Image (cartoon, rainbow, N blue to C red; front, side, top):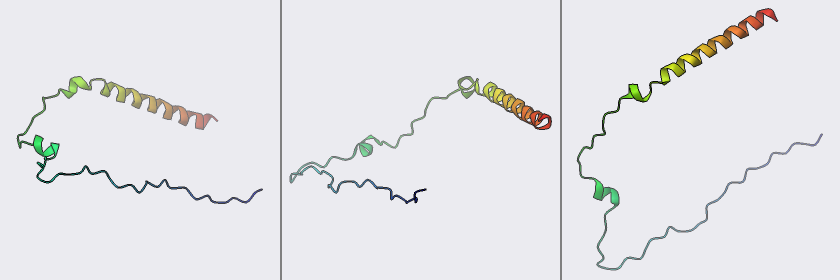
Length: 83
């Protein structure tokens, strides 16, 4: 049998390239970031969501999964005693 050798994983190195910054002209107007321009300090409320109607199927799905798990456990226990 051949001797196992450990291989070193190769890390992908990112190229050493500086981030592009556009040239600025003297006296040019400095533009604020988009996030700073959009923030007004006002609280925006989202509309109310009725979760009961949105997730009405979840309870039945959970019940079905629980029943399936119980049937499988009972089947395993009975097979353990029989075999």
